[in-house]
Image (cartoon, rainbow, N blue to C red):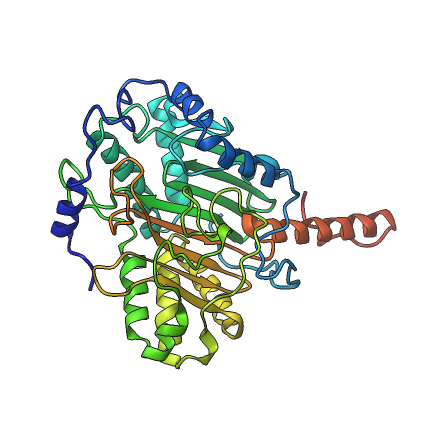
Amino acid sequence: MVTTASRRYKDFYDYIPLKDDPRVAGLNNIDPYKYSQNITSSELAKPIIALWKQKLESPFYGITSDGHKKENLFHLEDENAPTAEINLTDRRKWSNPEFIIFDVGVRLDQLSEHERKLVMKLLRSALSKEGYEKVLGAIQTNAFLGELCESRAILNDCSYFVMIFGTPSVTTPWGFAFFGHHTSLNFFFLAKQMTISPVFIGAEPNIISHGPHKGLEICVREEERGLMFMQSLPQELQAKAQIYKELHDREMPADRWNPADQRHLGGAFQDNRVIPYEGILVSTLSLGDQEALVEVISSFLEILPHPVLTARLAQVRRHFDETYFCWIGGYDKEDSFYYRVQSPVICVEFDHHSGVFLTNSDPKKYHVHTIIRTPNGNDYGREWLRLYREANASNDSKMANGACTSDRVPV
């Protein structure tokens, strides 16, 4: 169905840059902060970063399909999640490039080996087994890219930030973020509920051809299941789902493609973006096709602990009457492509990208980006936090008026 591992090895070997290529020259020894200063002050990057920073100045609202947030989508309930104040401004400063845009939190390369192991233990405890393996694979493929391109000072297994918000608790809200090149995860916990959103996981290349992790691949299920679903649709539905035939189509409006994000819409600094529904309405599909799409979505959400995954997929199914699937590019087995599944409660994107460190100018199947967003305000668990605060305010009011407060939520 998709390109074999041996073919992917061959594909990316053709695009490994030479040592004196400007994109990698001197990156084995340069200080990451000096490198980031060079990148962010370049004429190419300055307008893009200025736009990102401008977006952060707007108060958080959430991704929507039409600019208006739908209410009463999210509720406080027991989802069997494993189990202060949240600084939302810093939470929104995550990013996925290899260069540093905001120096927030602490970098793993500033920690001792013991402290780094504790960070990884925290990740393992908050993710499913599949999720931890995927995140670890993203870190390992990043280090592999550093070896391929002799850019080890920039691309390694310690070039990530961690931030903790609030105080870890089984009753009151808290969270943490882990982000760096091709890996960004934002966790929020409240009693027996949790979310990981926004999420960015990717790799260039997404397969390791040699060394101790030879054969490791990540984000394969997202690619395989998405392509299989598109190929299984009747021809008339394929035509309706395919909103653009080319990955950089001349019919695209000016804001539909940019050099940094290319096709995906929900990346870093896009917290308030309006993303109109596109493609085919899922509720019009057969029950078999609907369940096949659930498997596509599950390949993204599999990072969640299993009880939480079950709750989240049930939520996804409840909104099939407003869930859309769209596709960009071809859908033969060798084609690179983009797709998105979007509803009031979920937005997942898969994209094949052009080279950044590798030299391919066109998107290739070994450079992948995947994104998870929770529309209508629950990225970062923000809607749950609002409900929690409202419940506390109500209980505080009852207490002030002398009412019984035996069921008061701790703050």
